[in-house]
Image (cartoon, rainbow, N blue to C red; front, side, top):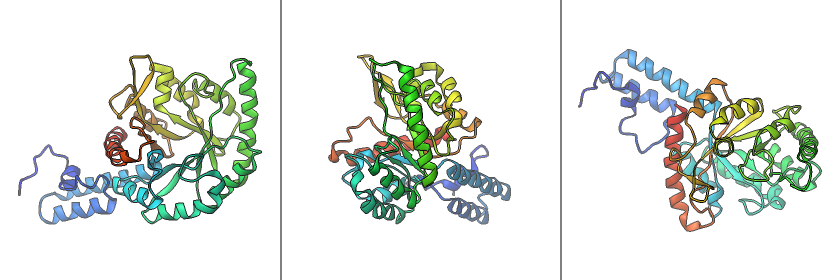
Length: 329
């Protein structure tokens, strides 16, 4: 047996030979550690270090459960997606329950219970439900939210608002603010949290983030908050994204992770995580503010409309997840 070098990390030694299992449980890590101690490979002090590291890892997963946006996988069942997500090390899914998604809005009451049951067979949760909802007075929207809340879904993503450039900008923000406040009242009644995602591009309300902050400043974030997308925030603010994040941070309930680079036509192009403009320092900032909430990985640089690319999507997601885990520390 090769002896352990003095400078080698004992936690890595305990994980040796398990590269095919991206996510080990705390129990598994501890079992490996105690086995190593029993055979003389690790001293007792190292076992205590591993136990501490495993506890920290478990706490991080509880504080920031990882999920993946399953837009590329409309051709798969809930059980198929859940099985793969569990194997990769995710705690859940962000699933599109909207037009063209896994479940159409009209079918939510009938189909969402079975969908969530399929996820639970592989220890996965529907951590975020991506929706077409932004109108508190829409009957179908209320029915969808009632169903999701009754099944234990905590977060849903709202549909975007778009500016009408022929109308005063501040007037539109005021209108949306009242609409979001009414939606927050509904969310409070049902026991679910809505999140509005910042999306880069001309005409999107929330792209600049200050406008979203203005609309949310009087709203309880436990009822309606923000899904902060670091890719879109970086594309819109460049080097100043940390200030924007700190401004909106009290409202942030969910974090979205993906990457981009600037293309030849001065348009952002999606790229694998770690290959673009997104700064890993963002995750240091998340730790500093003690962010608690789901972190959702989005892989959008392959065409999600082609079912034949499903294996390529899983391979890409696995690589992105490895980068994300490194950045999370």
